[in-house]
Length: 234
Image (cartoon, rainbow, N blue to C red; front, side):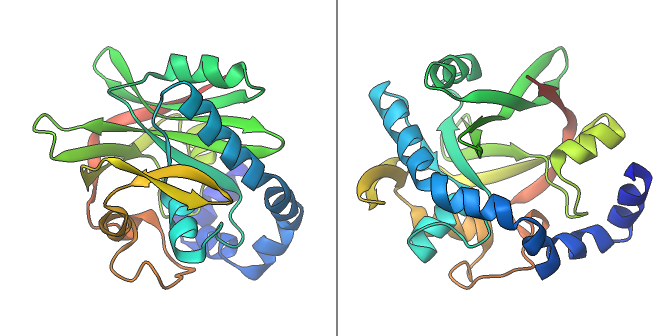
């Protein structure tokens, strides 16, 4: 099965399968769970971090859904958040979320000589996956760097690592931002103060128009990094 999955990914068939309506039908149960629990988990994450003076904001598809759809993107199955990696570390977040009923599952690490830089960490609660991404500030403070591991071959990051033992790293460069309060789900959350510019940098000028074929490879400010990455399962 792993061999077939790898072959399908190389010829581009796996990505087409996972973008198809049949794949969405396969995930129907997960979609129902997400629709039932995601708002409560979103509020919970915002409340926990705020109570501990840690800035957190919705990112990627979660942010896009909030701004474009006034909710979550249809068929989304996880929640994405960002934190400033120069101001909080992964161990603090892990301890905080463990104390509030979240289970850590995996973290992504970029290998820098003999050091490991945290790219993201994943937690689960009430069957909802929560991804926390670490944004790092440039030396001149004009930009933020974020690393990701997604390819456009249809394989998940976990599948890619399990098959190959290492991951290609991609560097994303964003204009620096501060955070403003935003009213969503009858509560307040933080979002980037340049949210329109940030979404354009994430998804292009047409971000307000849903694109079912969009993938990270289309992001103009995203480039392959010279360092490989690995996963550390909790």
